Length: 316
Image (cartoon, rainbow, N blue to C red; front, side):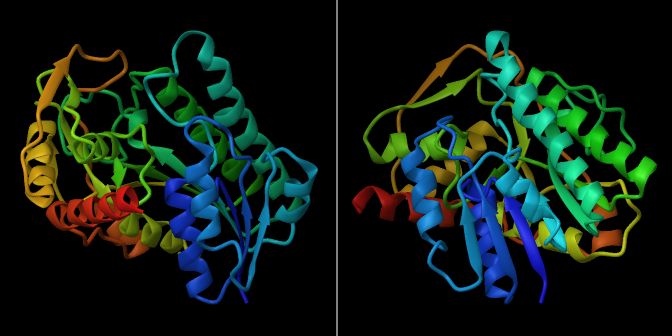
């Protein structure tokens, strides 16, 4: 039986991953420190979805806690999704928290995995490492150029994964996520904010003129990419884009949300935010080749799933 350790397990993506691993009959150690970057009640609700299931052990602790590091040796696969998210708050005095939670904690986990000779560690990186690129879609050969302190820390942790692979043969795989959405999305992320505001009768607040383009990836597709990376026979230190089937600008995405809501919400616009890139868009050809993975959910269908979840949550 495969044994997996998942960090950040109470979060948006990782909670879906834990459920998928349990559905497949794996044993899972689900780790989360329940930081208050957003409402801890939502994280506890995510934990409640799988916390009582057979085969899972929930550990409420920091990644660097001995209670966590001691369990690394028992894992066949470590999925490292814990960290400090968000571009907009990564500036100024907040940067220290990003370095601590995204870089330092990753190094400590890598060290534990190296000592325990864990066969595979899958790291959740980000398309933020690319910044503003000269052409799109971007593939893994492009030179990373982060446009935010957050992106810098994600790239630093990704480099650490590569260093442990090169020096010690640790089986790391880094996945560069492109704007993940779907049920349980973090409340600070755009689709979540838009849908909740509309359901509450408030105007949607968007930055800029709405023409910024994003490559969106449904959470279920990302879970499949993570699991594929956990079992694929690939070289240590491999890096892959995990991106969706289509790109769209913010105005177009709001149109899709309005369609599923059944009404057109009011929109308020404000100035651009430092660190926000003008576009994201990736090629997942390498992931398809090496991992056998491609995104399947269309954006229209995926937004429908998220609207339905948010609507049910607001009624409940």
